[in-house]
Length: 102
Image 1 (tube, rainbow, N blue to C red):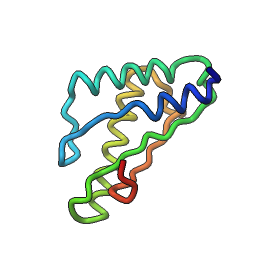
Image 2: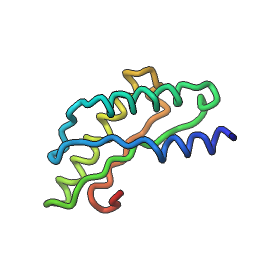
Image 3: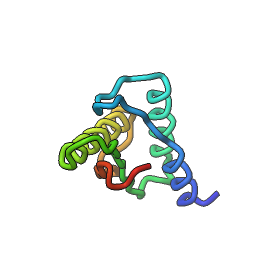
Image 4: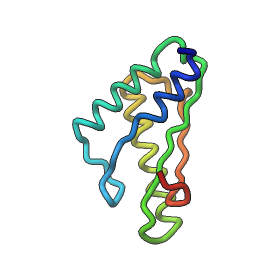
């Protein structure tokens, strides 16, 4: 499978869930998802790729607060990937709030 297609497949299949208020509760599923994704991103075939970690939030209130929560969620995932050996310069975050639901 070509590297780009592999990267897109991986990116579309890794989902981490958070509590309603946006605070991460480490779960076995989230930990294993982070480890699997980090392993894939460390693959030398992806060394020149850049990835966007997207955060989304539920439509529960103030739009500005939802955007801030989604950015914190994306940042949390990015920090976990970096802690698992992914180079920070490969990653960027983007918070979508509830504007782009999953």
